[in-house]
Length: 181
Image (cartoon, rainbow, N blue to C red; front, side):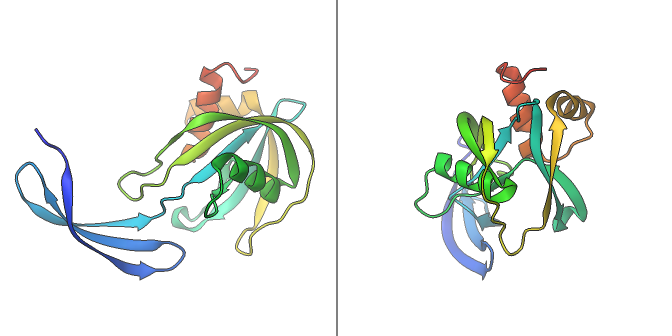
């Protein structure tokens, strides 16, 4: 069975922080049509799991309006136009934490919410930290938190952390024996 859908027409419904796209699509299998709305965020983003010299994960806490709560997350951000994902990871980590990271190792990428947007999230593991310069975006208010990686891993396994970029990156790094747990 052919599971693909073809785009009949497409238009930008709204333009703000991200474009909202509305497509009229048709099933290749049987010709039925439907309207599909999604966010246009194709450049992607990066997330960095970094450990300090005491094996603590460098995390951030910030308010996320859609969830109406302060979330524990790893430093992350969008890739600028024309920017390499690894360069974005170095930049975003320093901008959010005020620390320069000496070593980054790519872990791979995933699509966080494929029903809503197509952008890839590129994951990195890093270490060797030294002072840098924090430079938050105008809309960022965050708090740094250093959490022992064993405690963070245990909290993820217990199901008490919800941010997928945090949970997936930590679990992937652990599965590759990169973490002292």
